[in-house]
Image 1: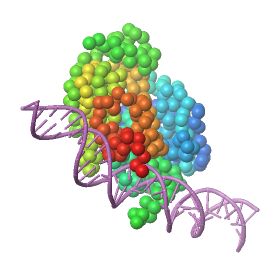
Image 2: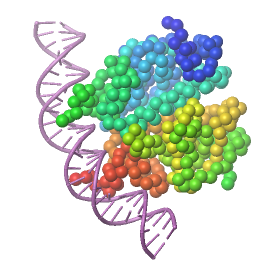
Image 3: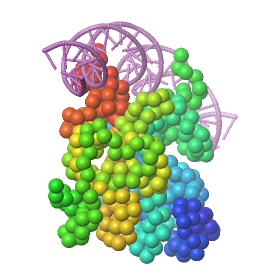
Image 4: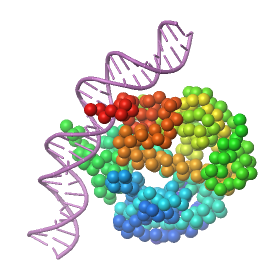
Length: 193
Length: 193
DNA sequence: GTCCCGGCTTGCCAAATGGCAAGAAATGCG
DNA sequence: CGCATTTCTTGCCATTTGGCAAGCCGGGAC
């Protein structure tokens, strides 16, 4: 596997030379994850900054009633890690699990920090990843408040139809903030009378 | 006004010497904002990284139906700015407005970057601010999905009762993701029969 | 093929929330 | 002080969503 996608990703996130991008990419190690395998378990510290080359991943947490709630989906071209746990070095509240077989490139927290230290351009990249995630979360929140469930489903369908192919309905439902029953009806397109 | 709270804030967010903290704080300029005054208008680029010394602030956006939705509340001791607009230098989608008279300390984007460049410890601080906001947003999202409106209101009441004194009900309602009518009933404590 | 199991759908009804409008209360302003 | 405006509450009813349980469907194991 080549790390071409990785270097392109670096360059797509901000101004950085191809040489720099390649140098930085060379620190990442390839990683393969099998379907259903966990990238992170609750209670452990997220220590892997993983660029996803292929495959689909989801993050989830258990609510106080023991129901699992999908907190995020990740497709290839995205960076997968639990922000708070990773940067604060605290136990994660959530799990991260592969929905399909995946491949990617990873570095540890320590390696990431070393790169931040050594490469100013890479600091910009790191910040851009954070800011992008932040903004995505915000707009999801807005939608949760202002849009009805059906519209939120339609948006997701528009934005990432591939994910819906690989995640079971109830997983998608909890991501959208509805029950699987409701999502099933929404899918049908039928306004429940 | 002294910048004591500001230097303490720097030190509370990570390991940094008192001297360093004071040096950095000296770059910030004092700022006073009158009640109802805007710190940021939609369409403009957020360019003020503001530490709030006293007062309360809220951020909001208009949804597609023209209803304003509160996206965040800020109390003294927090940093106020619109993450995506500020770091990406793009027009803001939201407004930031003072709920009460406020005082604080501010620097521009350019000054912040200069500090990041010159002071590694301050970079850590900047990241910590981002990560903290990210985590807060995530847990708010979780609550929005898993907890009923009454529980979300109770949490807010527990976490920041002061804010509720200064924000009108409909503002709080949209923050919680309910209508003002519903929040009024929730407040009353009366399960609507 | 047959059985089993998990994932999805669907009917029925309950609970939560919204929408609207009227009125009461509070607040700001001249 | 008094008017005008906003804010908050409340009743009535519609809509949305949830909860439960039964049934259906499709894929893998044997």
